[in-house]
Length: 420
Image (cartoon, rainbow, N blue to C red; front, top):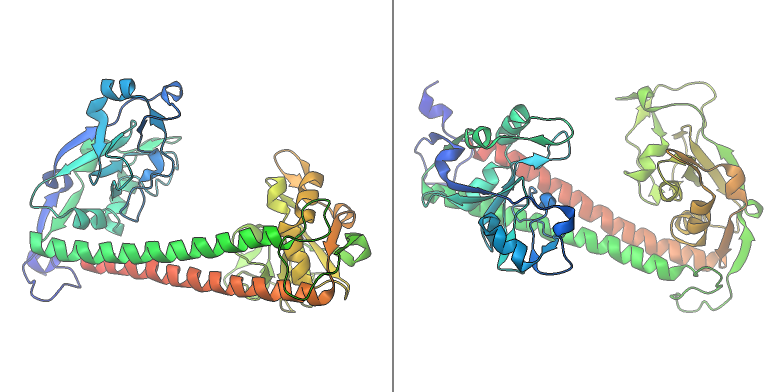
C-alpha cells in the first residue's frame, strides 16, 4: 500500500482527494503558555475568574462551572498566565489515573473577557493555516487518546510533558478541508450538547416535582396534587404495610456474558430507574437463588454512604434473580410498589432511612430498620396517578439517554473514519 493511500481517511467530503501531510502537534501550535501557581489561600469571593482544572472535556467547549476567583493584584502579578475569550486551552494534568480528558483541546466561551489559568492548564496559539475546530476534533480521536495514554506519567496525579504533547503525530489536510471537518464536528457537538441539556432538564423536572408531590416532614398533604384528590395522607410504619425478605448470594465475580438475569445491589446506584424491566447482567443459576415474582421493591442493604442506600427500585418482571445485599419489600394491596419506591427514594422515608443507616467506610441498612420507617401515603387511586406521571417522565429521560448514547457512538465512529 502506498504512503498516499495510508494518509487518506476512509470518509471525506466531496472534492477533496489530496493525501494528508504528516506533522507533529508542535508544527500546528505556534505558542503555548502555562498557568500560574495558585494556592488555596489565593482564592477570593470575586475578582478575575480562573479556568478550573476540570474545564477540559470532549465537547469542544470549556466547562467553566467550577471557576474560582483571584483578586486583580494577584492576576496582574501572574498576567503571563492569562487566557482570553474564544481562545483554546488544554490540560496536561489529571487526578484520574486513566486521564480521560488530559490533552483534549477546548475553546473558552465564558461570560468574562479574561481568565487566569492554574498550573497544568495551557493556552494554545495555533498557526494561521490550522482550523481550530479541526484541532479540537483531532484531540478527541482514539489515535490521539492512545498516545496520551502511552505517554502519561505519574500515579496520584498523572501528567504529560510539554515536549511529549507537542511531539504527538498528526496528519492534516488543506485548510479548506480542515474547515469542513471542523465545522461538521462542531455542529455534531452542538447537537450532543442540546440533547444533554434536554436530558438534564427532564431529570431536574422529575427531581423538582417529586419534592412537591410528597409531604414534607411532619405534614400530611403534599404541595402539588392531581385534581380531585383532597383527603389527608395516612401515616403508618412500613412494617404494617409490607412483607420483607433478603436477596441471596452472588457477587460481581459471578457475572457472565449469558445465563440467568440478575440484579446486583451496586447496579441500583448507576443503571436503573424506578421501574426495572430490562436487565443486562447474567450469572450461572445456583440453588437457593431468590427469584422475583414481579412487583418487589428492592433497596440496597449496604453502600458507601447513607444517601446511597436510601433509594429503591421495583422489579417489573418475574424470573429475575435478586442477589445478596438487597432488601426485598413486598407491599400489601394498600400500597402500589412503584409509589413505595418513589417514596423511599424521595419522600419522608428517604430521610428516615438515611438516619438509620449505620457504619463508617461501608454503611448498612437492614429489614428491621425498614420495618420501623414511617410511610405517608394517599389512597391507592392517587398513588397510581403519581406513579403514572413519574413513569412518563422516566420514559422521556430514557429516550433522551438513548439518543445521547447514539450521538456519542456516531461521533466516535466518524472520528475514526474522518481522520488519518
